[in-house]
Length: 282
Image (cartoon, rainbow, N blue to C red; front, top):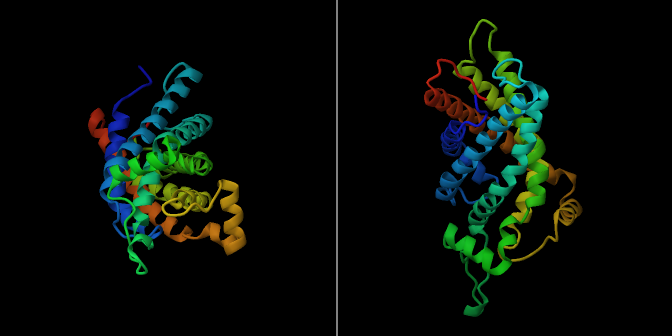
């Protein structure tokens, strides 16, 4: 059997839609602008998660097939395969997700005041971007194509360990919760394992998420940071060590329902697409 399976991408897209609907209000709270830019992430993050789950599952199967000459599915999955697949997913996620998160954050930051000097002494709030397309065009015009990957280094340092703490706990918690007599995990096991994995992943990723978000939000009206180290240095000098854990509670709280919805949507849709009688990823 071929290790590549397209339905993982379709199921990931469905799970992505579920996670955005469940978690987006809490996501905007930590950046400002409640429901700002909702249409963009609903369309794009679903595609992003489609790639994430598709890459993870297919990479895991490829590694298992390469190592053993056959596909491993379910109990007994190699920890090294899950680890390597998670790391590959983290790298790939930056290539696609960097511009997505940049545009989302820029649109969410529209609530920041901006002084329009061309109209005399009076200032007023002016939106820098009219929408996702205008935001992309403005960034490319003013910063070049590389501007779409502002904060990519910080995102890479967030996502490689972040996806390790996302998929590894999920895979093994799901199997630990599932009784040995069962042929596959129940929807409850998927929901609980996915929620816990999401809380763990977002909690541990918070420091680099703070840095990444600050770098990506930078440049809307002013350029404050010269890079990751400069952002870390300035943030520490001005606000102390605690700044890197700002929003950790919101991240962990929102990570549970978002990831629970993500994995449950993924697993159930994958089951329907494959016509399986058990819930099983990979």
